[in-house]
Amino acid sequence: MTCRTFRLFAGWSFAWSTRVPWRRFRNFYGSGEEIAGLLAMLASGDAEAADRALRQLWANLHHQGGTIAVGALAVPFLLRIATTGHPGLGAQTLHLVAEIGRCQHMGDGSREGLLQVAQEPLRVEGSTMCPVDWTIQAARQAVTDDLPLLLPLLDDPDPEVRSTTAYVLATATGEIPRVSSALRGRLATKTTRWSG
Image (cartoon, rainbow, N blue to C red):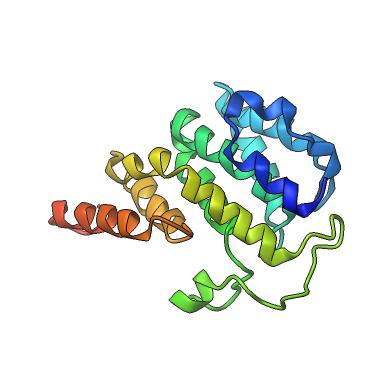
């Protein structure tokens, strides 16, 4: 599978996760095959197992501010789990998605730093040899493809989910007027702080 065909999996539904060739992609600590199992644990009704799986996914998919190709494959599944999985982990799961769709931005909290895609055009992730910029773009495209899942979360009763959803939406690569309108509409309905 090449980097070009890798993107085809971004639109698949959660039920198809077994058809994704996870083993062809490494995570930061080993085979990508374990990602499918961790996603299944995160989606389970077992709160403790889901919490452990999410912590492991953070380590495997977003290590020291960097992202990896298998992370882009996981984004559609993470988004579905964030909307249907354990309610206490929704915001943390969304935060992982947002970070997979961003360049390493350690120490740069500016809008430009957070939304930067290109670092070094030829920089590749070592285990898959996919360009890092491409991985980030694939994750952002997966976010854009799943806007129908994300936009309703702007009205979630949990303020952390609402604010993290806005952080994820900032990575969308398309339908910018729709995203902007939804964010402005949400802000207009709230008379107190965004997160409260």
